[in-house]
Image 1: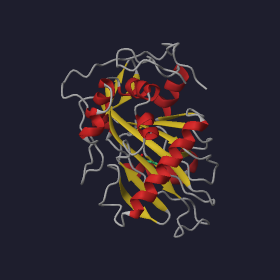
Image 2: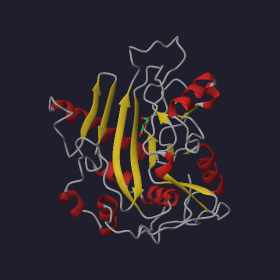
Image 3: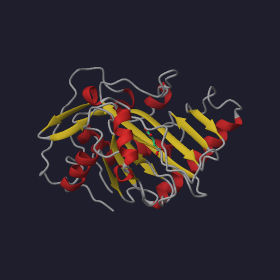
Image 4: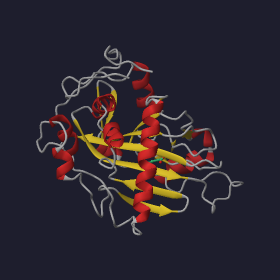
Length: 300
Ligand SMILES: O=C(O)CCC(=O)C(=O)O
């Protein structure tokens, strides 16, 4: 994918095809297969494995950040790292990738900022009974429907969007992210939606896709990591985006904003992605479904 333009006004718009936009609207997610090429996947894998190693070497990876990143989950079968954006240039390049930012901007409906960047590396949970029907105790959303979404030109916009790329091939037993499609529009108690989905598992969709594939989803859709049933070590990189005036997220208890040194080392437009902009002018921008994708976007 090549998208040289990098300012809010000149980023490709629309950045999604009408079919991709429709899929996202209807289901709350869309997958773009092999969006990131093999070279970038390899660089991201290496960077995140090095970060895991370096964090573990501190002896207290939850409380002792490395390159401003830290762990929020540290179990033998699951490591979750947050605020990873400045840990390696390959990771920063992912979060600030103009093509991904352009899609986030279109989905939010305004200029955006990066709200957080994270990574999960996990394998089979030895406590899970693989003979029992699959259960996903961490099903969640990141923003509620009433506050986090609005309609324009009949299309759904969400103020918290995730761009998750799998760094390994994901088959059906490999724990790809699961979502309850459509739940971003059904404002009833979450437990009722989850119960309905368990009663009919066809209501749960799973990411099954080759390494480098991008899952874009609204944080209003109920989702979580899938169940790893194979011997694989799953690994992903995730960038979160919100309207440009939103605060950084990065873990409610102990927010780890990008460091000043890192922000100052970046071009102006990237600095806005990292800092946000404290102003009510959010630079709103909306498409209609039939608007064709910007011809500058080339898809693999
Ligand atoms: O690791 C996953 O598959 C899910 C990540 C997730 O739940 C999130 O980013 O909110």
